[in-house]
Length: 540
Image (spheres, rainbow, N blue to C red):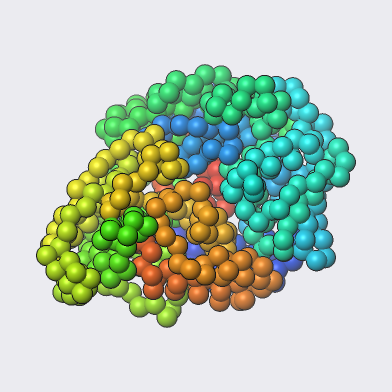
C-alpha cells in the first residue's frame, strides 16, 4: 500500500509542477523558455541549438519496443492519426520541431519570419536533404505536402490559404491572419511530416499508407500487420552522426500479461502506453518510468439525428450528473486517472471558472431526464476501442444504470474505431462513442485543430453555433491574456451546450529498462510529442 501511495504522490507532484508552470507568461513575438501552456510560439526564428554527442554515447544495437495498439496507416501523413503516431516518427522530419524548454527549433527549415501584417509566413529551407528514395527535398516538395492537408484538399492544417514557392529553397505560407499557433501546429501535427512527392505520385496514396518515404533517421525494413515493424538507419540522413542505433524493432502485443512477461524477461527494452497497475509494479522493481498527461477522454453522442435522445442538452447534462467520476478515478483508477468536468484540464489557463462542476448527483440526473421526456430512462449503445480503460467504462455503465439508462457496450478494434472516427463507417443514430483528444501544450492549438465545426473526425457531434468565430479570435490574439480570455469563452460555450461528456485525463506511461538512454518519448512533457529512436542509444 505504501508503494502505491508513493507512486500516486509522484503523479501529483508532476501535476503540480505542470500546473505551476502553466501560470507564467511571456509576450507573443519573443522566444521564451517558459512552459508553453502559457507562452505562445516565437513569431521569428529561434536560434539553432546544437549538441555534440558526449563521449559516453555508444553506437550500435537494436532498440526493441513493445506497443499494445497496432499500426494502421503510418506512411501517408494526411492519414496518420492516433496510435499510428506512436510508430511513425522515426521516418519523418517537419519544417520545425518543438523541443525541451518549449522552444520551436529549426528542422527542415533553417529560419522563418512572419510578414508584418501577419498575412504570410516564409520558411528558408535546409539544402542538401534527400528523401529515402534519393529525391531532393525542396520548396516544391513542401508545397506538394502542404497542399494535401490544407483547404480545399484537406483541413488537417487549417488556417493556411495557399502555399507559394519563392525559389528552390524558399516557401511562403499565405494566411488570412496572424496565428499564434501556426509554428506549433507545424511542429506537432502529423500532417506536417514531409513525404517524397515522387513516391506518392508514382505509387499512390493507398500504397503510401504502409510505405513511409520521408527524410527521417530511419527507413522501413519490414512490417507485418498487427504484429511487428522493423526499421534500419537512413544511410543518407542529413543530421550527420545520427542515429546511433543499428535499428528499431516494434512488437504489437495486446495482452497485458504477455507484455509483462516479455518486458521482464528482457525481450524488449521499452514498453509504451503502460497501464497504471503494471507501471506501479515495474517501478517498484527498479525500472525507469516516464509519465506525461495523456489524452482527454470523453463520451460523445449522436447529436445530429433529431430523434436521438442525445439531441436534447438536458439528456447530455443528466448523464454527467449520473456518474461519480471521482469515485471511478480514485477506485479502479488508483488515483492515476484525473476526473475532468470541462473540455480542458482543471489547471488549464483556458478553464472556465464561470462553469460550476457538475458533481455526482443522481437525483439531479433523474430530474433532468424527466424534464427531457425520459423519466423511465432509455437504452443506447456506446462504442469503445478494445484498448480503452474497460474498468472505467464498466463503472460508467453501472452509474448510468442506477438512473435508468442502460448502456450496451460495443467493443471494437483499433482498425474499426479508425473507420468510425474518420467517417468511413458512420456512427449509428441515437448511439454514443468514446473520443480521445490530444492534450496539447498550446490550448489555442487544441481548439483550432479539434473543435472547429469542420473538424474531419467525429462528424456526428453538432458543434455550438459561433464556436468557429471564437476560435478564430483566440488564434489571432497577440498576448496570452487576450487569447485565454477567449479560450475560456469557448470552454463555457461547450460546457453550457454539454456538447460532450468529459470523463477523465488518461495518464500516458512508458517504462524502459536501464540499457535505453533517451528513448525519445514525451518531448517537453507532451504525450504526443515523440522522436522515437532519434538520439537513443544502448548503455552497456
